[in-house]
Length: 62
Image (cartoon, rainbow, N blue to C red; front, side, top):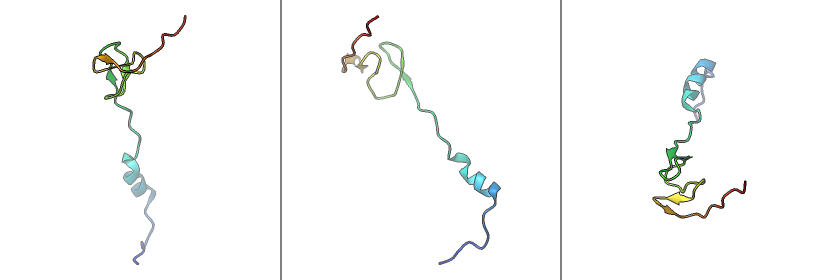
């Protein structure tokens, strides 16, 4: 099996790893309560998805 003749420099390694960073999640706005939520998922604040309630959310007692 062929082996590398010389090791890669730190600069070359860093250039290769330049795109290995994490990206922020894309969030959309809930049309019912206008909170930020993950797309294609029910809103965790109000429980609505596509205009109808799919999760019953209990109101926080004040």
